[in-house]
Amino acid sequence: MADGIDFNEETARMLERTYQTPDVLGQRSRFHQLLGLRPGDRVLDIGVGPGLLARELGETVGENGKLSGIDQSEAMLAMTRKRCADLEHADFTMADACELPYPDASFDAVVSTQVYEYVADMPRALAEAARVLVPGGRIQILDTDWDSAVWSTRHPERMRKVMDAWDDHLHDAHLPTTLAPLLEAAGFSVYLREVIPLVNPTFQKNCYSYGISAAIRGFVAGRRGVDEDEARAWREEFRSLDQAGAYFFSLNRYVFAGIKL
Ligand SMILES: C[S@@+](CC[C@H](N)C(=O)[O-])C[C@H]1O[C@@H](n2cnc3c(N)ncnc32)[C@H](O)[C@@H]1O
Image 1 (cartoon, protein in one colour):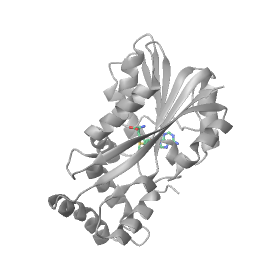
Image 2 (spheres, protein in one colour):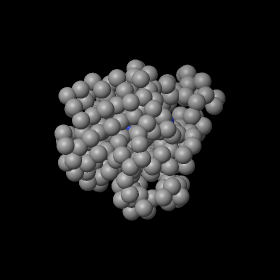
Image 3 (cartoon, rainbow, N blue to C red):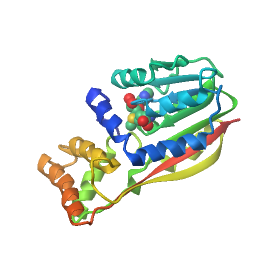
């Protein structure tokens, strides 16, 4: 159950850095390619975060299209508005994924990446996404299941404890396992299920696991019996594994897409 991540200015800066690493750039590029957006399309990004995907979507749909984005965090919206300031066909609004501030049938495509795993009422969120799409419109979603993480360690018990505590940052840490039936129940026909793997063979500043492990360390300290020293030691181990040439990290992103019937 999510009771933790505060999407404030500091988190916004951390996400912006981490989401500009080459592995996340590759993830975004594949997601964008799968979406097959065209100039002139009207697209909604639910939970824009730092706005890196939104910016790319806005450029693809162009000035004859429309880009809308929502987020429940003012810090995230501020970052996205700045990033997309020159896109006159873009608008960004503070709103919840379960209450979209748009009329029925406003969009040709809806996307949401790493947001629905934080949402408590998924049937309602997907009903809202379906409502704002035109018939035949598409939804494309990306979420993570941290059970797919493979992370080198000489302390498997500590790793398990830390990852169990990290699961608490999400409302549903295993959303990919139920997303397809949830989409079907909301009136979508699911036509795509794809995995995008992230792989880091080293522990360096420009890789995803470097940044996210700092966020994990900060989040888990003081939860589920993990204390500050244990959280620090958990992350420090990655430096020593890296120096020994023994570091490895991988994590799967799951993409689902559906068409509104
Ligand atoms: C991990 S970030 C992902 C941001 C962005 N989609 C990306 O992939 O770069 C999660 C974002 O979802 C937003 N969020 C979480 N729950 C939300 C909700 N119920 N409604 C709207 N936004 C939400 C957060 O404020 C945050 O900006």
